[in-house]
Image (cartoon, rainbow, N blue to C red; front, side):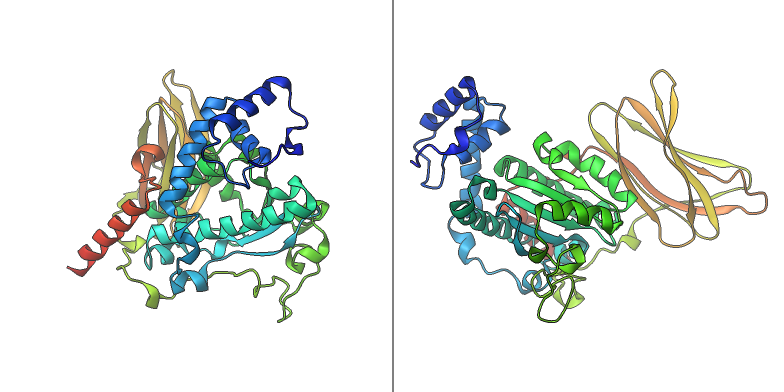
Length: 413
């Protein structure tokens, strides 16, 4: 058992007692690196309930065994497509010695990856990266103290599109990763800068944060495309020589790249030569199609029951444009606009997602009242879903592999 560390400084007597109780109850599974700082993470995640923290830790240790995090993962050979096209890297350390992780998020081609390899392989790659960063953080803490034990992350959303993540397998992957992170990595995040976030990301984030712990949410800072704002914030905790020029620093790689792409892999679109499954193109989705006459509106009513739900839409018009909005009506008949109005123009379908609550009726409305000359041909696919019910949010590697094997068999018939 590691000696008592200075992590116990700043806690009150009740919390100190909970730490002592927790330490005794889990002494049979402790490793040398499991000091008081480690134990306090689990206690804080369970509001200082020692019994709940013990349950959480023991379940996490079983999860680690299931994924081979301390055994087979070290020798796991990632598929070539992941080695070449997984976006992530670390360029240095923040002012307290914590590793800086940079993720060019748009370079993660979820559609291509999940048509080339299994969901389990993507998860293993992410876990291997995370475990390596945490190992580095522990080494840093030996020199810089326990403030170096947490991670500083920069997610770059330049060019982000919600379309990939409205695809069910991609959404399942995101929610599975969130579930795994919150259950097994409590309080490892120092700060997460989400930069170059478009407005549509706010809708997506309002959905996923319902699956995140308050601690995690409190550490996330979201910025738009004004680099002056987010670069100044990053440089408050990171020295310039530790991050690429693109993020406000002074680093460039051997090729003179201000993004340091030799160090921070940018990912990118997966070549179809890697695909092992027939891509079920989004264009094959069965849209509802109709013509809305001049001066008319068309309503699509969706019922939202109790519980946290999401409304997803893909809407488009064959030519010209049409006004699109979403209204909410509660049981008392109170009505409000919750999205739009906006113009949907000819071209790719407008794709979106937003959290909804019930009981209420949500009306997706196509408004052609301002057009006196043209009828409009529109197409749409809209639904209300409950992620915890309608998505396969599984952290079982065996189940993921079986699903892939089954899919491969079906595709080869």
